[in-house]
Image (cartoon, rainbow, N blue to C red; front, side, top):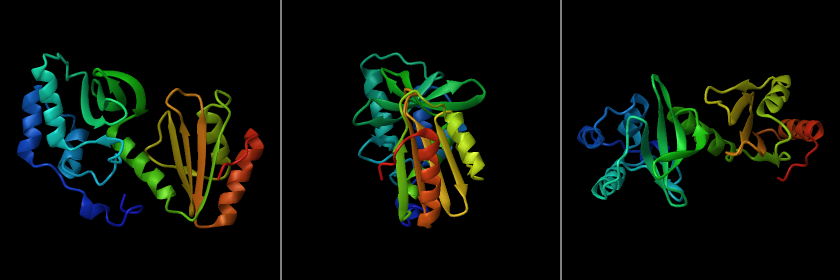
Length: 224
């Protein structure tokens, strides 16, 4: 995030240990390590990782949110699903537990997962950071591919032909890669239908060359 927002480290603020422990007592389980680490660094102010106009992850507010649901008699198995940010246009971001594996991030409705977002919370944070980083580059090209026409692997194959190296945070909906000073961001919509391709670079020629290749191979026009 520091690469896309110079003030990021001055904005973030972690939650105090007693507040993290209060959440664990409230829900009766130990938090997943990745979420506990998130709270230690971002529990009071996440530095707009989630964009405050869409979702809020402040721990104090999350505790109050869960307390209200408990007071209303709502029964939730927190060993299966745990809200960690509540939205203004949707109910919550939640962690969906996967046994010994890293919890996945989903949108929740009534504490039920309704939409896959990312393979893990760390991956989601890096994906958001990568997208924000792309917006800081002077040359950007974007295009949407026809719905349900191409799979993510089709686009990844073309990216590999350019020598793009994938980032760690890639998952079944996101492919983010770097080649020199050019960034490539491919995202499949949550319903697995419409791929969006974004290219960002400090070098206009490089960005335009990659964009034109995707246009020719997949028969689309960029909308930048």
